[in-house]
Image (tube, rainbow, N blue to C red; front, side, top):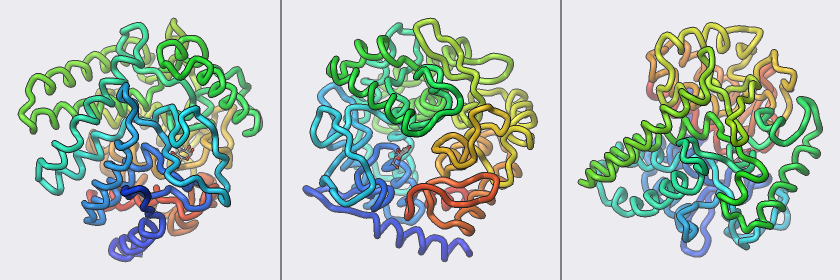
Length: 402
Ligand code: GLC
C-alpha cells in the first residue's frame, strides 16, 4: 500500500470513529471495544489528524478533552460522553459520573505543538494555554509527594499500559497470572482511591505509589514543549519555569532511576527499582535522556538482541527473556503502535535512522498483515484485541519523516 492509499484508509477509519456530543467532537479508539474518549488516545488522534491535514478536527479533539478539566487542573483519562450499553467495554464507576478520576501520560503539549507547527497561528495556542498550564501544574504540584521531582501514578492504568508487568510487584502479583486477577487488583485500587476521594497526595502514598519511566520521560518532553509554547506567547517567566521543572525531573530520573545505563521504574517512598524488562527502557530516548553512547549500548544489548526485544515484528512491549513475557498478553509482550511510535521518535532524536526505519517498516508490516488492531503478536504478526483501532494511524507519522 502506498502512503496516499494508507492516508485514505486512516482518514476513513477516523471518520468512522468520530463522534459528536453536547457541542463537542471527539474520536473513539474503537467503536466496539472503547466507545468513549481517552486522554492519550486523543493526543494521538490530534497527531494523526495533523498528518491527514485535518487541523480543525485535531483542535476539536483536544478542546473536547480539556472541556472536562477538574477544578484542581486534572484532566480525566476517560470521558463517558454518552453511556453505551451494547459494547464490550465494562463501565467502571469512578465516583464522578461522566468521567474517570485518573490521568494518562501527559501528551497534550506535544499534540498542541504538532498543530501549531502546521498552522503557525497562535490563536489555538492562546485558547488552550490556560488548561495546559493548569494540567501540568496539577502534575507538578499534586503528584510529587516528597518534592523529589518525580511524578507518581496512583494506578497502573495511569501509565496507559494497564496490565504491564512493570506493575506486578507493586500490585503484589507474580510474573504469571490471569488478566482477570490483574483487573480485580486494579479495581480494588480504584475502590481504595474512591474511599479517600481521589485526593492524590493522600492516596498515592498509601496504596500504589509508582514513578513510571515512560510517564516521566513523556512529561519531560512535554514540559520542554510547554516552555516553548509559553515563549511563543511572550510569557518568558512561564517559559523559564517549565524549563527549570523539566531540568529537575531529568536530574531526578538520572539520580533515582538510572542504573548501569538503564532507567527503571521506581516505587514506594524509598524509590525501589522495579527491574522488569519492558519497552520502558527505550522511552527515555523520546526525551533525549540517554547520552549517545548509552543509547548505542542500550540498542545493541536490548532492542537489536534477539533474546530481548528483537522479535520477528518490532517492538515487543516486554523482553522475550522476561519471565512475564506473553506474546498474546495484554501489555505483556505484544507490539503496540503507540509504543512503536515513541521508540521511533526517540531513535530519530539520536539520528539512528536505519533502526528507526526498521521500527516504522515493522509497524507498517503489522498493519498490512493484520489491519487496524489494538496490538500484535510480535512473533507472528497476528492482530489481537480491539478492531478498527485508531492508533494504527500513527504509522503515517512514522512514514512521512524518514
Ligand atoms: C486500553 C489501553 C489504554 C488506552 C485505552 C483506550 O485501556 O491500555 O492505553 O488508552 O485502552 O484505547
